[in-house]
Amino acid sequence: MISENLRNIQASIPSHVTLVAVSKTKPVVALMEVYNAGQRVFGENKVQEMCEKYDVMPKDIQWHLIGHLQTNKVKYLAPFVALIHSVDSFKLLQEINKQALKNNRVIDCLLQFHIAQEETKFGLSENEASELVLSNEFKLMKNVRIVGVMGMASFTEDNESVRNEFQSLKKIFTNLKNKFFSKEDCFKEISMGMSGDYLLAIEEGSTMVRVGSSIFGAR
Image (cartoon, rainbow, N blue to C red; front, side, top):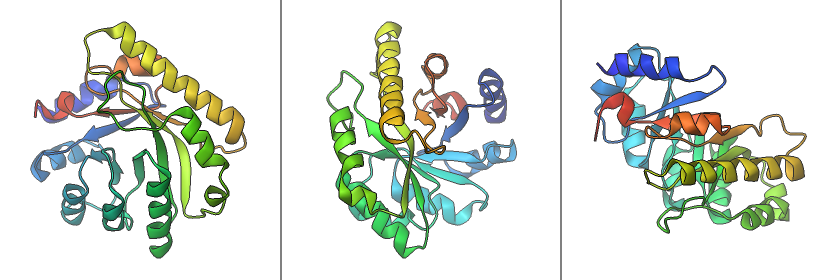
């Protein structure tokens, strides 16, 4: 059932879009079913859960941290995380850089933007992101690499407002690319779209969709 869901979703997304299987709260046996069906990119919301799964699962998996990340938890995932989607402050980026250095790694990160109408979502404004990228401290950071942007749309049935939010993230990405990352080939990811709206997100330029319940079933 789970592997069939996975195949259906894989068939619905273009080859240039990365599917992140959001496996939070799901048991390892369910993740292994998806792994055995060929999936290698998994997204987790909580650091402790991700570390526990990392310990027992195959080592060719790319682990993505997609939830809000507290600075005091960075050290636990720094040895192995492939991509952090949720960089929403300068302080957090500094800590990721520090812990990556300790592990002799460069950690890929996405800047998370607040695009939803809801107040509960974390994220930067475009001005805050510009200040961050222009700062001298950022220029000295050698152990983080900004590879794109992430955003979460409002939880609503109104497709037009969701589309508008996706368009605003695409616009932020384009502005940042043109102003600060035009020579950086690695700055290419737009992580947006979840189970309910990933096809809409792809239409609006998403390169990375975070799909959980459509693969694993409802939580």
